[in-house]
Image 1 (cartoon, one colour):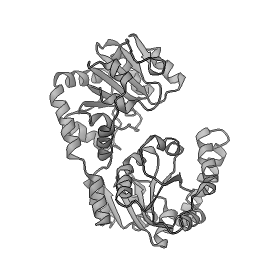
Image 2: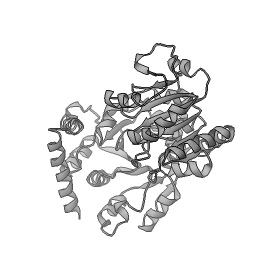
Image 3: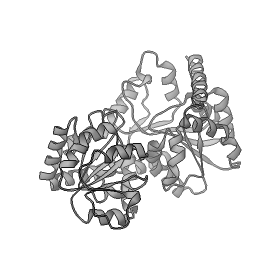
Image 4: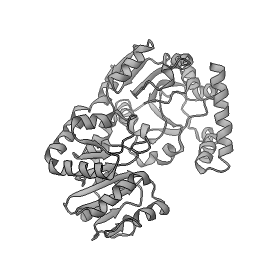
Length: 401
């Protein structure tokens, strides 16, 4: 199976190089790996702690633990790798203490051996999932401690399939798994992996920290003016198909933050609006319209601080965006029906402040439910966030005690 895995990795490399001819993201993926060693710092003699994150979402998930480790152990060299170009492109927008950030090389045997010999890690943390077998085996052979943090496992993962023996052997290289929930722990136990602890999701710590550090956006504050505000965060066209008709009937103020802020997408939204709107990029400090479109990146987290309730996009494609970000401010959160990969979405529903919708009618009903029971809904959101904080400290104490 290892041979087949390596053949598959080879095909991934060939495919990405071919795609780079036509696709800008694939080109970034290829070029970033070509140049990575040329920019590598001298880390001889330093104690290296390596975090691997698939993309920006996993970086946010691992960031509280990274910062905790670096703050408590300032002499360590904190290295972060990404698989995705989006992680490399946007990680600098986060407050972090990483000493060096780069791509993880394509997971061939030779690439993994060279990478581990270069960084010589003392500890390795893989965030959530995405386990690259050759790098994991090389790190284990070097003598590094391996940990999975905020892990989440589902029956559909290859580790639990009849053909998953090789992938299960990869998981057995880890010293410990710090998983988000009991379902993940039970799945690991079903394949003989018992070195697990349910510590929760460190993203809760991240959004709480973001809230305490938040500097309120004066332009958005002026627009909201202490009124009821409906926020649409990270929306896609499938979301907008049911959301925009409702927005046109609303009386309250609305903030729309599309996932893609390119002109084509923003124009597609504005064409459907029947109420006065403004684009953030074209406004001064005082905004007099009913709807504000955040057509630049970086303002959404500030906007949630002014929200009364929110609709979060991605739930019609199975790629639901971060619903913890609005919840931390104490509000009802609405999203599309495809959220099985995100256990917190079902937990929101069971806790009484999350609402899954598939149509305009269901969205309208969810908004009315939140509006008529707003104080109770908001309290449930705040209580849920408070009850689920602390994963970072639990993981840190287990590793460094």
